[in-house]
Length: 562
Image 1 (cartoon, rainbow, N blue to C red):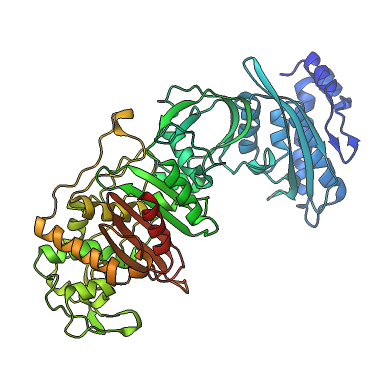
Image 2: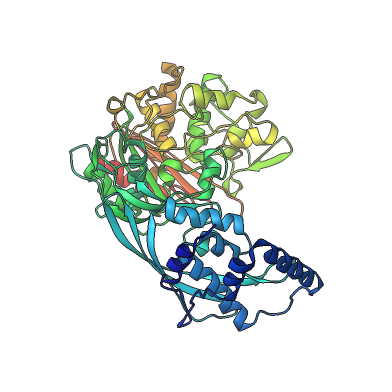
């Protein structure tokens, strides 16, 4: 029960301002009547009110200006004065409003709130917020703009604030809350392999990588968190994908900066700068370079900086997948480098009619010629000889893909080669169907061919935090490996990759790819290659043929690597 002293204190609180008019709480006859007559008078009055309300018609029609300003005035004044119950009662969802407004003070540590409303328009009332966020001995002013909308409540048609979390702060979604406290992850200072600092000012496409490093190593790198006001997103589900759909937590106000820890990466500053230059202006281009013998990531860049396609993309790799498929066919004696191999214009399997680009065919050609020219039917024609899980096993056992166990140091997608049947299995042989990869995965494929065995790519050395890197269960035989290198070398010198790789020189190999995507006029262009101890792969979405789009990007970086 509220005392007279408490009521007096609320009367002295500065009122919210609605459209330039102050909303003042007045203690009038109602309060006095209760004090004199007690509960019986209230009970009789309540009974009369209910009886009258029952006879009233539900309010309908457009809201009047008085209803809009009066409702907004009631809500904002109560919120400003800290009367959470009264503010919540002015909304059409009192329970949700009360919970969030209570947390505004208790969890977000926001005090000294001043709310100033603007001019209403069609039921919508904009307002500004001035307040202070205080945590322990640290405080900082908070200002922002928001808005509320007045609607008729279902059932009785009374005007109420249409409740959504965004009323409290425009960055909030329903189910979110505001919290002030120590930041979840201390900041980190990321270094390249030579000890230089990695920043988005110098390397614009590393933003997502730096964020991921903070998430992974913030509490392990020796730093201390800062104090911040942030939006904590509601739980959209137990799985990571569902949480991702809900959005990441967002910092709204930093009260104090944290002390960064230090994390050293494997990135080569010269190669990273070159990679950034190659994708600059190409929003859908991504590329990755690896040291083939170790798996160290030397560079990674995305032309579009909002998503790390290079590490987390999930795209059909097109004919670059033929590197893996060819290794499988060679092992099973279903193909041999210099022996004749069918490459017809069409091949039907599982009810689908497959064809080559521009419906070409190679009469009496070898498997080497089919690989170098990227003949689809040369691979599809072997589908009747394969089990549904053969390609999946090859990708996992030899190339370390599709096991979801890479520990790179940041978030990655580790490739997907599902077990499929009939036409979908056949499509997987040429990098379509359900197969999904990204440049990191395909750079690793070329690295495996060059080094002779799978070395899981990594950005942060496993010695930093004792991580265990993924391994493949077996390696290709010497004969298979030699044949696969011959295929990729010939493709780089005289096949579809020759134009892009011209002038690269040295011990090199490559494979091009074009992946059809529903709804796209042009396919995604892919290119994977190696030179010396460096392997690389890139993709240009909606770019067309890989040799013409992703090829020049990859080749330029292989030249730079020397």
